[in-house]
Image (tube, rainbow, N blue to C red; front, side, top):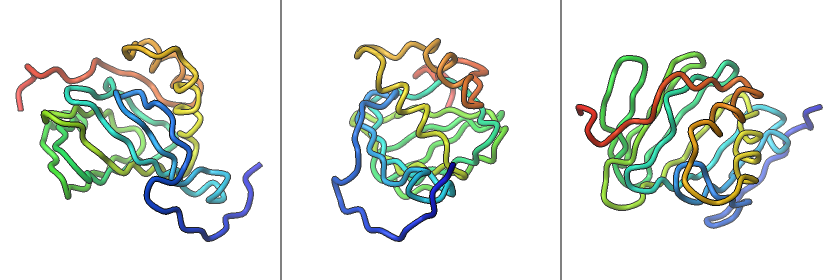
Amino acid sequence: MVNEAAAYILGPGEGRTVEGPAGGPLTFKARGEETGGALTAIENVIAPGDGPPLHTHAGEDEAWYVLEGTLRFKLGDDLGAAPAGSFVFIPRGVAHCFQNIGDAPARILVLFTPSGMERFFDAFSELPAGPVDPDSFRTIGAGIGMHVTGPTLACSDPQ
């Protein structure tokens, strides 16, 4: 059952932080139980070279705002760079992945509508620390409508 949303302000550095699946901390800025199920928002730090495998979401649209760094996105068949200040939107069902192509950690704001993806990040944060296993994405994601459809981007992939 989803609770009613209440207005709130969450300041810099506030929110529950867990180890994210892409090599850095992930801080929840809004969760479904706080937004009446409308939205999940996370601030995510992505280590150089890291990013998730190609995947789709059955039930959520996803958007990113790149705060720091440069990411490379694969959106369907398209591949393109997204430097700081870029906005990226992916409707549910579109295969996508990204990779930090810079030398320093990238920082992004990620929005999922409606909420629900926090369950993936909560489950992922309970795994033992260490390198990301693509099978973890597949196993955890399958239970919430996220389907891995291909590999991560590699530095050797064409720009």
